[in-house]
Length: 203
Image 1: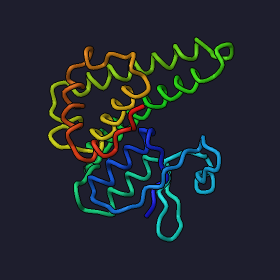
Image 2 (image 1 turned 45 degrees about the horizontal axis):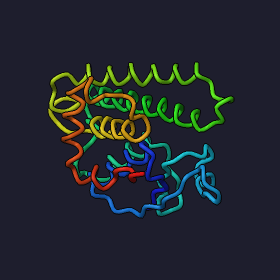
Image 3 (image 1 turned 180 degrees about the vertical axis):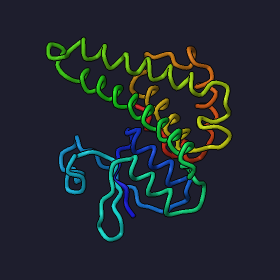
Image 4 (image 1 turned 135 degrees about the horizontal axis):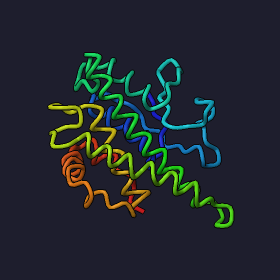
């Protein structure tokens, strides 16, 4: 099994953490759809990463589909609960975390455009999503040990990857000061080997 991924993508990091937690062997192929000579489009017509390439050549995407598949192929460290109510709770956390990452990525890409072509209104709109989304994560977490209750799940992986992405691409948001419960969770997750090994490169 191969994983096409960028080392800076929070969605790819989510999958890499899940693979590590599930103890599934794979080959990491570093590829970015933004780079010349990328192979991503050959396997995902949407041109997005991550892409999981199966032994028979089947391509699985996007990150939400990949992690759900991974959780079914190994009984180790179940990440998505089977009871429907708990399952929906975890997937809701994933949707919130991914949505924040979407907004951060949109701001990052907009700021890479020439200054005269940038839309301040677009950046403000995305920034509001980041602000409200992060606040919602903090409120939903409350004083719980883990995002979805008493056990570590995909919800925690998603939130941890999102908070890491905020540090990497949107450092102006003082989420640690504003939301100490998220800071405590991030510190705890940061000690797990899966998070250590998948951290984005320092630039």
